[in-house]
Length: 269
Image (cartoon, rainbow, N blue to C red; front, top):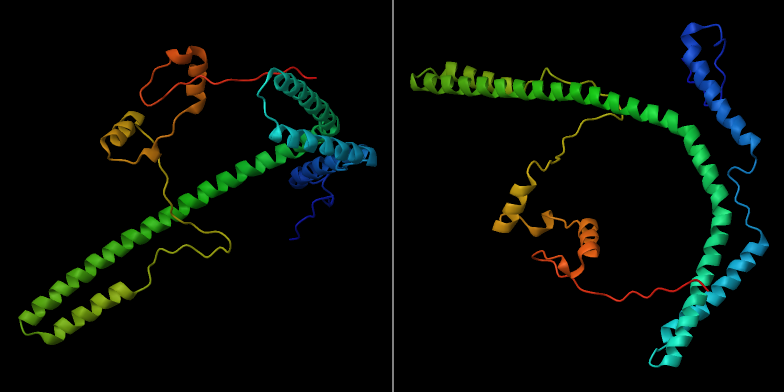
């Protein structure tokens, strides 16, 4: 059996019911290729020299504004007016640069979304297939592991019983019987386990640990008592900020301090 290449057309697939799915998959792949061929610009990023020069000019101007802003001090009305003028100019530059960036990137993002949508369905189906196979393999290997564990427990119990019988035989002066019992116990422990999964290269099962918070209230109580570290609790910054913005200093919760901050707004120059 030969695996078909990604763009190989299945032989006689139209007339073979068993290969109908292979042909459908081939048609889908070729549809992607043809869609890309119809738009030769897909995958190309054409940044001409005029854009490079514009970016260089904008960067030089931005560096000047950044250096000036860092060194600027607002200690008078004149300074305030000058800083306000520069702030509006900076906002205007940001708007201009963002507009140019969007002009270039929007078509690229559209093409990316187009390609993602083409490959999204097969990737989604393969992800489901991967999950299903992993679940089935995992279940089988877990059953094997449980069988091995049970077999090991049974063997240890049998070896312990044989060891006790050997001790009783020693007590009765039956040294040869005791030696046979001890040899049998050792053989029971050392023999290979019957439950064994075949070796499949690249596929294995490992056991890790996961968790589930079944009671947030109990977790909070445990932290409050000192029975668990504070790092197990994470404040909901989004919810806290939403309530602080709505209530201002009327938001009163132990452990949270609300303070007023100044926010400077400026129109775009």
